[in-house]
Image 1 (cartoon, rainbow, N blue to C red):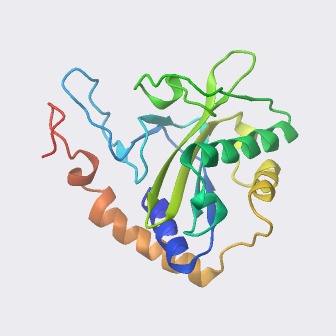
Image 2: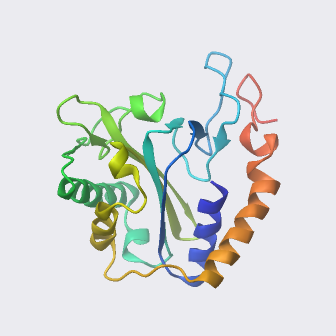
Image 3: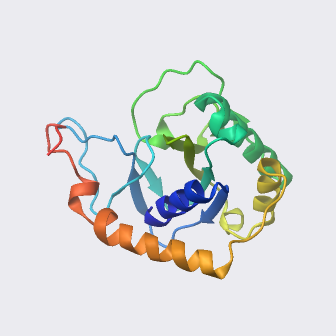
Length: 217
């Protein structure tokens, strides 16, 4: 989560879009920036990390997680949130179909239930057409005109590899050109992420800023 945020701030400063894909060695839980744990809710598991984006609780492990950063002034950043979410997920669905995994998009007009992310679909989430189970969702945040999108897609193991061929197809659908970050930029972003990890993401003040009644402490 710290690296995702660091990449977003680099993207905002340079005006360049960026993308990062990763999977998980062990199960993990992230919660949205505005997530609150009230007395009637289940307590957060130990080690849960609060994201920079909104949304609900996401259980990671059998998913591929990704971040897209959209600089201020870009067409995608200027779009309405729902239109941008749909645009990203339509291209994600097309890329996965090319890899042999068919999905369907949730229609608009769904009421929000407020539960964990993968049990609570919203419009334009990805769903398995056979089982009806949600397999892909995301959360966004706008800051000074720039947008960060963090997504999670539950996939067969072979498709969870960050080097999988379908990811290149996904990126082709999002951008006219693409190139890997050079070593100097990676080193700078990583150093920023380590600072954010020690100063923010590793602290209880960030990860559990509300008490048992749901009030900020």
